[in-house]
Length: 162
Image (cartoon, rainbow, N blue to C red; front, side, top):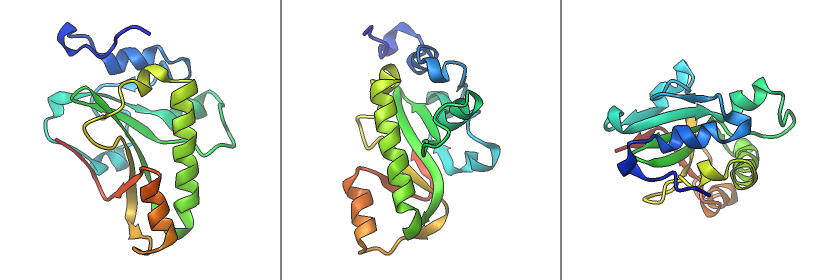
């Protein structure tokens, strides 16, 4: 695999990784433009100039009729050379299984279909986030809350990248 994470070249590694991933190759958008208008406020960028673009994974796959019965993940966004993956979804106890299925699907997809995007995953902090669409309604000490954290998923009200 070629080195696509070299900031000094001035190239856009996230854009190149998306373009080299057949199933989403046309989905790259500058800044936060791939994120639905009503969900853009769920992502706050400390410095918008550090945003290397975004990708609406789910929409790319829907447009091609891929994985129609799977729980697919929503978004990827590049910030300061690291890619973060986030799912905007209702955060209640009954949806934990669905979101964990989406996370498992994403990890499998990254491993088998999108290795160049996967190589850019954030390393400075967690790379997977469950962004609550309407508050957090999972009992704090429940088995579901523990499972979410054990799976490496961080439920938050807004993805803040600085």
